[in-house]
Length: 315
Image (cartoon, rainbow, N blue to C red; front, side, top):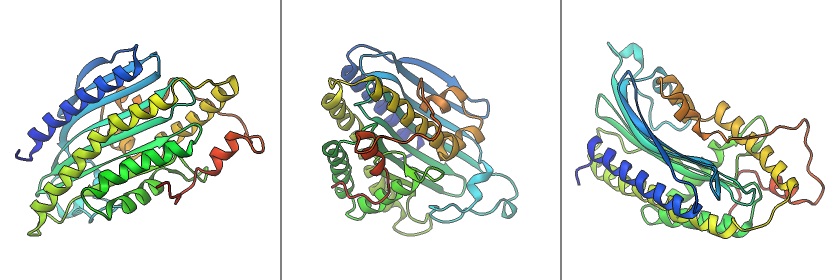
């Protein structure tokens, strides 16, 4: 298969179909509803939302493919940029970009089932600039060691199948990225995260490396459904109390804080005139905040908070 924006777009749409079917089977009750949308500046997408299910309270599996003038923030050297892009002053006009991807956030009904997020994306711009990005991270309301080990072991296997250095590198990247700095805690137990994954377009090895990384990128996307449906099966029938539900709302509140303050995908969508309903799909139906909350000593809530930090070796 030739790797170009058309074949990538088709593959992503098929991935969206497969993931939606898997989640519907795991939920056992609710079905996705689909809305197709267009963007005035170029492109569009199809948003699929599932809600009020047996397992899933609210979730989305979104596909988008947008194009147009490249946004200004792409020309600022970021913490994890492969290399700074030519500044706008060095260009006569803004280059054109194309970006496509699948993004998923699932908020379960039960506080015993974790929140999960996945995004895989492809970006290209005039000047033979293109890269891959993505990742998967897990946000349990209550951290279960066996589930955390299962989750990270599966991601490590995906990474190791392509490059033995990827898991350690991308796990640290996830720990750093999914960090709520003003709370001094991670959003969950991390996972893997990567961006601008490619070699310099001028190098002889660029095409080979891009094709290798594209295969890795595909495997990250395909890993989502078997990992999350297993976690659903393990936890969906566990009993819970009103106290557990209150804690779930507080943890969802932290999720909201991260997405609205730090998430680069949210920023990209807002700054490229994306569809607001799709961009903010990641927010839960209900969340909570409590002034100066302190968990009870030796409680499961206290234990979970103690594990929301960088650098934990789950494998």
